Amino acid sequence: LNINQKKFELLMVYFWDKDAKYKTDAFLIIKDGYIVYDVYDLGHDQNKKHMFWSFSKSLTNILMVIAVNKKILKLDDYVHQYYPSMKRARASEVKLEHVLNMSSGFRFYEEHPLNIILSDSIYVYYSEKNRIDAALSITKRKMKFPPGKQFNYGTHEPILAMGILKKAINNKKIYNDFPWTELFDKLGMKSIHFEQDLSGTFLGGSGGWGTARDYAKLGILMLNHGKWGEEELLPKSFVEWSTKKIAPALYRPKRERGQRRLNIESYGSYWWLNYKLPMNKHRPYPNAPEDLYQAMGFRGQTMGVIPSLNMIILRMGSDGRKPKQKVKRDKMYKLLFDAMGLDFNLEGKKASRGVY
Image (tube, rainbow, N blue to C red; front, side):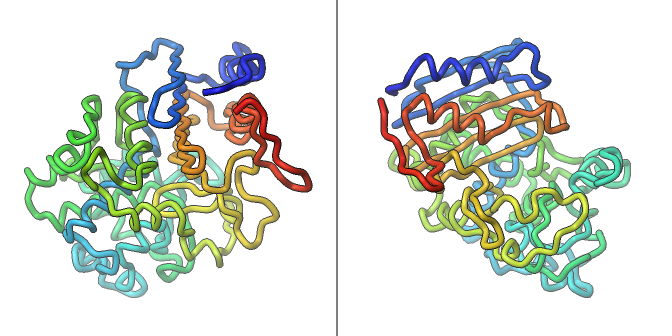
């Protein structure tokens, strides 16, 4: 990796600013299939597991794509086929594809606009009622929109997706082994822990743990269009559906109080995209290539996959909730690409091509 070391040092100073409220635990760069930078702090190392938070959503995407490819599920399956509690007004029309595009229409606040303690994401995981069977409890939630009409980012959809997979497999051992036999073991991801609720459903929204290097293998799989060695684990068409096709509901959203990402960022299937939405002037991350797609999570978890550069950038962190307590992802990309002599923010100027 050809890089200007003095400029790269600016990124390191930003990440590990001792006066900052955010904390960087791990940072990896993978280029052309090789780890070219790998650094840890705050007691973390190559072998210490880190909580994935919403990294787990992108992991769930891969597992669901595998299930669809194996014809265990179909994108146009109705959720009520697996959960009869969905057989009611509006809910009966929800399909698996809506669940994977965060557009089922449930009334759900990932982060409540008034108080984080009131957030539905916390209620789903920790309330006495919901932790027994989280997916079932989600199917009983009130519907606020018709399916496919409103994008609403939330932990509830990937939990429901993993519940649907459990119902479709209908075999406890096969389901419990599925993430390992179909993905983790094949990629050599030996550190992974994937939490389940009391009914045995994998908590696909935020229930994963593992090392930075193991999670980066998911990025490599996606970068290689779903192939791992000679084996095709994911069809290229499904990789592109997940990471290039914007969820249709994002083209016609209604802004809601507290839904801060609405009309700002674009989304595929459990991956954040860098495409500009029609109502915006800029793409979400102007200092990164348009084909960037990201797994992102609470407290600053970020894995950017960039096919045009054959590159993966992974940061695990312990950031706070408030904006001043978080690493700014676009600034991270700007500092890194400045050091590589690349400029992707081309509004009114030409790209510079330096030492890279």
